[in-house]
Image (cartoon, rainbow, N blue to C red):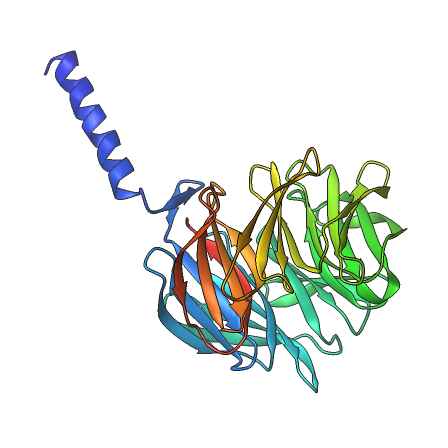
Length: 335
């Protein structure tokens, strides 16, 4: 066989691989099938959605009033924080996505009101709002293997760095962010700093480069920015309404806020802090996640209850699906 023929065959093989996996994301040599999941608070269910067709392909019962969900890196397992309604919740549901079945419900007692899930390094980090702490669940060992207190009131959301050395919690009732700086991963040796910011911080995200934390202020219609090098307040950005969630795009260029009163997505230039655009929606936006390239957003929304698919460049809704009553927590993988 000539070198030219070999080259052509190699090219065809590469093209075949690209075509085969065009709808998939490859994670460390393995393909991740596209999947979108959303929690229905009132129904206490997890809806499993095909993010391409925007069709519900499965539902799973969870604990009472589930608030937050994350997916494993391969998209095969969902972890749900069962926050609870009138009675505080004390469990995390572990769900097999392919079979739409709850594998186990992990009792995290005496911790209550789990929230703010983050999947980092194959482990699930979460807040326990009632107990004023953060903790880590190891799925492989099926146990909570690490706990540390925040000492702050209503530690609600948590974000962390990919190396598991820095974590930040938004503490709604203490008007603060708690910064945890660990010497090693897994966490050992620590420096904890409480950073006073504006009123009622809930939404929170860490920039992809790890240099800034952005926190949405429920009571001020603003975002406070913290410099992670100094762990000090850096800047306030007025946005004219409550940002239920604040999320960096994967490339770190933009921050998108779900604006509940205005029923819109607010897009901010992360470098200049300037408003880029507002995307009007038919429902009240709540949770938000992005495709890997940042071109598509998936938003859980209420009144009416929908999960929306949004083209961020065009600023248009390209898909919608009814999943259940009051969808909130949302996660995506493989797209």
